[in-house]
Image (cartoon, rainbow, N blue to C red; front, side):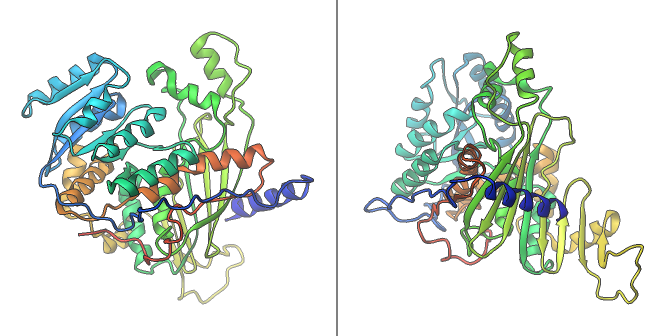
Length: 455
């Protein structure tokens, strides 16, 4: 909390020192087009055996090909990549496991044929970031549900395009945010829902990940190129999605304002020079970006983004409640009020009861997530995918499509979690002034009370 208070004080000082800056930059909410209705709790017709078309077969896509073959209730019907050798490799891998799949490759718009393929019910998008939205829009226009890797959209316009197309076509548009299904986050969310922490009033999330070894692994250096050209929190959803669920965003509360600060790009230009051999003088993305948000009900969220420094991997994941606290990084712990404390120790002023190690494991075992059966947990850990959370995400997506249930994450989650990228840029480019967060539900954010899973 001390770090948060220091950040708040610094932001307040900055606002006071910038003459003529607007108090809040407004972001308009366009009227819902005639004939559309919101997608809150939307349930499509059940699909007994979901035909999946995977677009993009790089690091994420090739992993999805392997993982989805273990998920019941679905099959991979088609694969697509601009590189023919990747598409052929996927076809060969799948050939030993079942019927042949349709293969589309060679041209940048090969995805269109996959989206038009009648054997495909769900288009699973794992391309580079700039192709996420075009593929998703085309797929929904052709009657397909879509699931989009993170970050699913980079601009406000893209977020609104996905929202409006999903509403108009009545097709699911889900963000593939695997961190919502990691074991600590699942358990802490259940604890929060059962009131263990009291009322959640503040949360923190991050994507702090040293990408030094990975920059050259991205096809045509696309990720480093994106960082060079864009400022703001470019990868917010890993840290943001799980805490939004705990705060019931658009399920009883909503985001209202955002403010961001960043460092200079100290390391970014060095990565470009190492990759290209040429001097870099125009790197936009700061090494560290901080974003602070407030909700309608007076709660706060702090996000961090850092892929340029060698600090340890962390998504932070902290929930601060009126009666308790949970944190995953750097050490998993839960702190609750210590009602039994009788004596004041001036050398150790903490009045809370802290659970770590075996004691924490015993406490969290009492709050198993309703979606995490012992059988699913065992299978997830066996199949893998970031320790099993990728598999749980895929399993829940297919389970809900099989049953005709609302998905765990809807198009408004996608838009809210992804809009941080452009909103943080707007704040940064205007001297770190507050920016409105648009209500992508257009007034329906308070209709549903509390996040929940469908069964």
